[in-house]
Image (cartoon, rainbow, N blue to C red):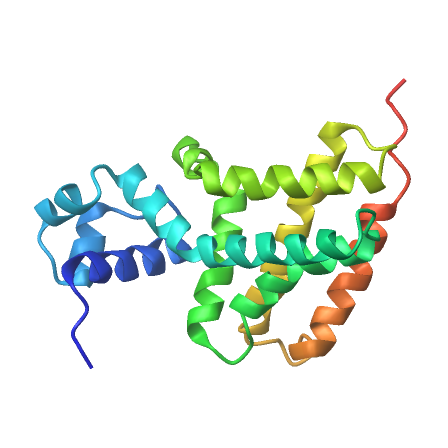
Length: 211
């Protein structure tokens, strides 16, 4: 097996550390130490620490986005008016496919997604590029057609919930449960539960406006 090149080693190390410690808790020095590279290598291959985070996030999420886009294409080719459950499955299914149980790399991906969703650092908010924006906007448009009562703001909130619930579930699979807690579901069972739950959440009536 070929030894990973310096760029890949840095990405691997940064993914692990960003997933474990977040953006502010990860230093470039820690990344290069784990990667066995020198400090200048990060600047040469990526630029800034924020650029490195963006590269890490895109490497993880681009395969998911590609599968989500293909799933939506297949669904819309079959019917212009898909059901909410079909859209939920097309969107969340790739998250389960890319984060299967029984693999530490999948657990790391899950933890990284949770970090991206919850990290307060401003730099974390700006990692996405045009490809990610396009997939999100296509799904927002598809959900808006079948859920016309939702405001754009509430629809975006619920879309974020699809990712958050799935990522947290996948991350929890790899945690050691306490003796008093049943282990989380894995495999196809968890996928079906998630689709049922998230379909109900997406289909809920609009939240009444504040008085």
